[in-house]
Image (cartoon, helix red, strand yellow):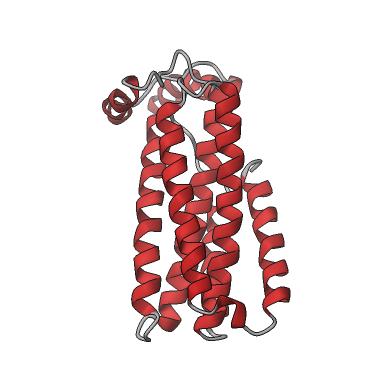
Length: 219
C-alpha cells in the first residue's frame, strides 16, 4: 500500500516533467533563484526549452572537460607541465560546479551519456598525454576551441531571444567562454602544434567533440 501511495504522489511530478508543464523548484533551487531575479531571469519570463538545453549540454561538456584534465594529470601530473594543467583543471571544476547548481535550480536532468563521457573523457586526456606534453596541449587546444565555438553559438541564441531576460546566464557563459579561450591559448604557448600528427589529431578530436555535443543535446 505504501508503494502504491508513493507512486501516486510522484505521478504529478513525472507528468509535469514529461509534458513540459511549469516546474516547481526545490528548496535549494528557490534559494539560488534569488540571484537571478536582479537580472530578470525568473521562471515566468525565460524560454524554458532554450535554457534547459543550454544547461543540459553545457553540464555534460564541462563534465567531459574535467575528465579530460583528470586523464592528463594522471599521466603528466608530476612533470613540469603538471601545474599548468592543474590550473586549467581548477577553472573547469568551477565551471562544472556552476552548471551543477543551475541543474538543481532549474530541475534539469543530466544526459544519460554521463557514464560514457566519464570513461571516454579520461581516456582521451590520458591517451593524448601519453604522446607527451605536446599531445596533451594539442588535445586542450582542440577541445577548448570546440567548447568556445559552442558557447558563442549559445550566446548568439540568447541574444536573439532576449538579452535582458537571460542576462545572468549570458554572463556565466561569456565568462566561461573567455576562460576556455585562455586555455586554448595556453595550449598553443606550450607547443601544442608540435604534437605528433597534429593536423590528424586535431581533425579526429574536433569530429569527436561535434558528435559528443550532438548526442548530449538529445539524450
